[in-house]
Length: 526
Image 1 (cartoon, rainbow, N blue to C red):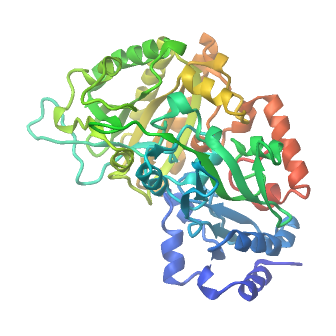
Image 2: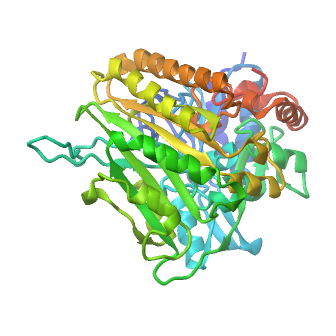
Image 3: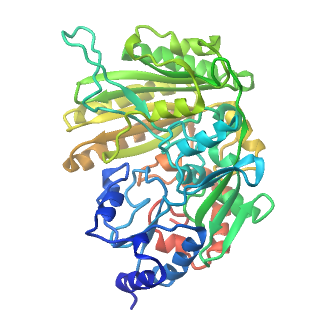
């Protein structure tokens, strides 16, 4: 019977030693320890492979396939490694294929409006290249986010991406009214909505073509003209069809200043004002097709055990030059009382905005995401915030607890732009909007708290879902990259899209290599 030792031996014959990282080496330890979530780094692959080209990826697929199809070996595919669900981008005692060396970013090779991006690239590199040419791309708000996971999951940005969490580094402190000490607690976003999604749609909607290695080892392209069924399935279908090695993304002209192409940042304030921010958010979303397409809003409430206090934050951006808040932004920027010392609103370039959202981001933390989507409704969102705040109380003693509930809008313009760009597998329609994605993000310090934190947050999410169902505001959609292991994102895509994904899998991967051999992530036939 085949085994991992034989697979490694074949890899050592086929590839130079520097592309093969083995346990016990410093390079292996550094690579395996660099995931966002500590739970991913607690998995220890038997070998980590670093392909330098698409041809290398094709070769490793040919080597691994017989071992994986018969169940002898598992493998995982890693881009940036920002998804916190254990096993999504790593595998224990199997083979992890790390795409970080496939990181080229080239504008103009396939048309002056298209940027070609390696699957291991980070969004900061994409932003730098396109902005230097006076253009922008629909990508993660945080420059640290990886391109691959976000572009395949279909989210409007993020970083896991796209992701929002609150940093509790020692350099961040919280301002608490009535205290004899001055504290400042900085809330940092590393993902969520793209700055441009209100007019450009989801990230996957802006992928013109995918270069992909199929289970046969064949390198092919999926686009609207070539393998269009695969192209549509890849727009939201995750790691189920092959290994994508390059994304060709559409770009658009960035507006010229002065002062700068974008304006925005973060506003920090206190929980009593949060209900009014929910009202303002829903009111703006209800404008529907009349809403300003240059806006980006996201509102959050969170708790840090280190300081024993709740805090709220609005992340707002306007994607047209302005020196101050336009009227449409003012309900979110003029909220009082706010922490003026932390107000970061200002004109920024695209790269500055992405760098600002990435600043202070932690990794190597124990973390968990889960999410649900609802229609934009004040009562639903306010009740959800109440459920969440109450749920946090029993776990406030958890070491290093930092948690947040974030409302991330899907405005009508986003859903309309998505529908106009060729279709995807997500199952969201303009008629579903406006909608709001509710992300429950938690991170903590001690492994012994894993179970109770997971159960508390799962219970809170279940209560929010039940409330939305009762009110008639629930939507089935669950964002894949923010989903927890107990969730079933593909079921939320709707039966027609589920059927499409399964049919495409059978057509392009008839032996089920990426269903059996890649157990991480969310599978199509579960």
